[in-house]
Image (cartoon, rainbow, N blue to C red; front, side):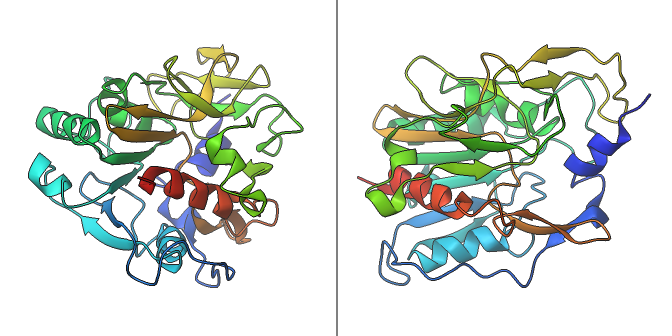
Amino acid sequence: MKLNFLLALCCPVLLKAQQVKDTSFHAPAFTPQYKQGSGPLVLFDEGHYNPHTLKGRYAAFGEVLRQDGYRLEKSTGELGLPYLQHAQVFVSANALYDPADWNLPARSAFAAGEVKALHEWVQQGGSLFLITDHMPCAASVNDVAQSFGFNLINGFAQKKDRGKEMFSRSRNNLHSNSITNGRNEAGRVDSFMIWGGTGFIAPAEAEIISSLGSGYEILLPSKAEEITDTTPRVSGLGFVNAAYRRYGKGKVVIFGDGAAFTAQLEGIYNHKRGMNHPDAGQNMQLLLNIMHWLSEK
């Protein structure tokens, strides 16, 4: 039996009508880290067939960052070291090698020269926030991730019981570290919510934000639209879905689900998905903590 429901839940590119930005969402008031428009410059990737854009499903992401004082600039051209050097943070969400072809063989969304430029830029002090997702997103950015020691799995991560995907300290799948603890008690994150995505193997030098565990499995189809009961899969045990590390003079954060920092409405019943969901109340704080760590000198 084909698991088409999985694609309906997880695939915003193939099923664009399924998910739209929630125009009613507005970030709650909080004390900004920087004065309005005076914070670090953030380059937001829209040059690699990204389904998430600042005017689209990542509008809420942009609103939160601007409210915190960051300056945002859309990045649409080929990445080179001189271009990257005028910014402090580069964010890429769900880059794709081909929005019309999700199947194997996998390919990189970033040209070899772009991978090299990002690697050198981080070594010199830049900060990379690489947000990815299920197949084919993970494969699309794995060359970038591997240059920093991360190995992304090009599959579909899902809970075995199909339950709500919460990560929390009480469940022992959200871990204590500089990002989850925040800069003070008000910044402490005790839980956050995701919607599918993928898992990956982090290098020994990385700090783990959240891990999948035995309650998850990662499906590994050769064709994204042909997921069946016999599709190969591996246990989520040993895989993580969010981690960070220092690299050279710079920093890298990898996050394995693109929906967590959106505010979307899904399906004909407009189910909330992202920071607008009632159980995702700390997703916004997690985003702020990640950005503060990345931009902290």
